[in-house]
Image 1 (cartoon, rainbow over the protein chains, first blue to last red):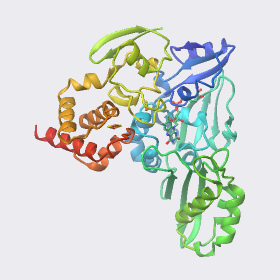
Image 2 (image 1 turned 90 degrees about the vertical axis):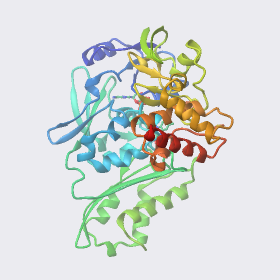
Image 3 (image 1 turned 60 degrees about the vertical axis):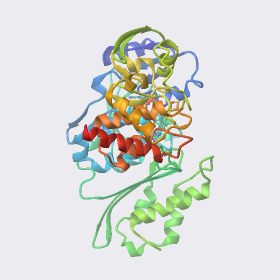
Image 4 (image 1 turned 180 degrees about the vertical axis):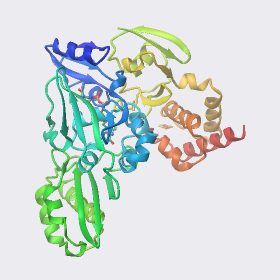
Length: 279
Length: 155
Ligand SMILES: Cc1cc2nc3c(=O)[nH]c(=O)nc-3n(C[C@@H](O)[C@@H](O)[C@H](O)COP(=O)(O)OP(=O)(O)OC[C@H]3O[C@@H](n4cnc5c(N)ncnc54)[C@H](O)[C@@H]3O)c2cc1C
Ligand code: FES
Ligand code: FES
C-alpha cells in the first residue's frame, strides 16, 4: 500500500495517472477502515478530505452544490441547507450517530454504494445530479443513472465525485416523506427506507416521486408505481393493483436483519402511509 | 510520514503510517489508555475523542485525519472545569458501573455541554446516541448530564 496526500486537485490527478495499482480515495474512512481486511495489499490510497475545494456547500446555476467531502455534520449544521432544502437536511438526522456524522462524507456514502445507504433515496426524488471530474474531463450526470447494479457505478477509473447538485427549488410546494425503518432509534441501519414527494390538487395526484432503499440491489425510483399513481384520485387507488406493482418493482432479500416478507409488507405500509390511504 | 497535531494541549509529532487508526496512535504511541476499544467498528462509542472540537470514533478514523488538528481525549477533558463537573455528576448519581463506556460518554457529554448545554433530555439523548453502555440502562447517565447542565447554568 502506498499512501498519497495530494496538495491540490491537479496534483491528485497527476498522482493517479502514474499509479498502476488499484486506487482508493480516503475521505472519512468510515467504510474503508472497516473493509481494509478485504482490500488487496497492492492498493494505493489517495487522501482527499483535506482538499477544501471539495467540501463547500454553495449555489451554482440554480442548484445547490454539496461538495463530495462535506461530512454529514457539515450538512446537518448548514444554515444554507436549512433554508433551501430543509426536508433533505432533516431526513439525514437519523444518519448513524454524531461520532460517525463528524467523519463520514456524502461522496463516500454514494460511492461506497451500499443498498442501505440513507442518502440515495433522497437524491433520487430530488432529481439530484453528480458532478464528476477526472484529469482532462468534467461531466454532470443525473444521479438516477449512477447506479447500474450492486456496487456498479457510472464512474470511470480515476474519476472523482466532485459535488452533488440538487435543484434549489426541488422541495418547494411539495409534500415530503422520508422514513427509515431499523431495529433501534439510535444508530439505525436501514431495513427499508422510503422517500417520497407529492403534489395533490383537488384530491388528484399531480406530481409524485417515490424511491426506496434496502429492497433492491441499489436504491431506485419506483417508476411503474409512479406511472400508475400519476393523475389518479386517491380513492381510485386499488390495494391489489398497488401490491402487484410494488411486488414487481422491489426485490427484497432475506438477511440477518429481516426476512423478505417483512421487508415487503413494511415497504407497502410505508408507501400507503405516504399516499395517505387506509385500505 | 511525519504528522503534527495538538494532543491534550501539547504539540506533538509522530512519524508513522498515516493510515494507522487514531485509537492505536493514542493508546500505543502516547499511552493514553482512557480511550477504550469496544467494537472497533464505530458502533459503541467507547473510543470517542474530540477531533477539531467534534466527537469522533477514533477506531475508524486514521492518523492522517488528525494532521495539523487538535485532539482532546478523556484524559485532557478530565482536567477541564466542565470535565471535572461531569465526573462529579457521574459520581453523585452513581451512574458508573463497570466504567468501560465512560471515557466515551465523558467526551460526548463534554461536547454537548460546550456547544449547547441546555438541560433538555431529548437533545442529550441525541448527543449521546453513538455511545453504548451495557451496564446501566442509560437513565442515570442522562440524569448526570442533566445535572451537569443545570450546575453549569448556575455557575
Ligand atoms: C457505525 C456506523 C454507522 C453507519 N450508519 C450509517 C447510516 O445510518 N446510514 C448510511 O447511509 N451509512 C451509514 N454508515 C456508512 C457511512 O458511514 C459511510 O457510507 C460513509 O458515508 C462513507 O463516507 P466516508 O467519507 O467515510 O468514505 P470512505 O470510507 O473514505 O470511502 C468509501 C468509498 O468511497 C470512495 N470515495 C470516497 N469519496 C469519494 C469521491 N469523492 N469520489 C469517488 N470515490 C470516493 C472511496 O474510494 C471508497 O471506496 C455507517 C457506518 C458506520 C461505521
Ligand atoms: S471501539 Fe470505536 S466505536 Fe466501538
Ligand atoms: S458502565 Fe459498564 S458499559 Fe457502561
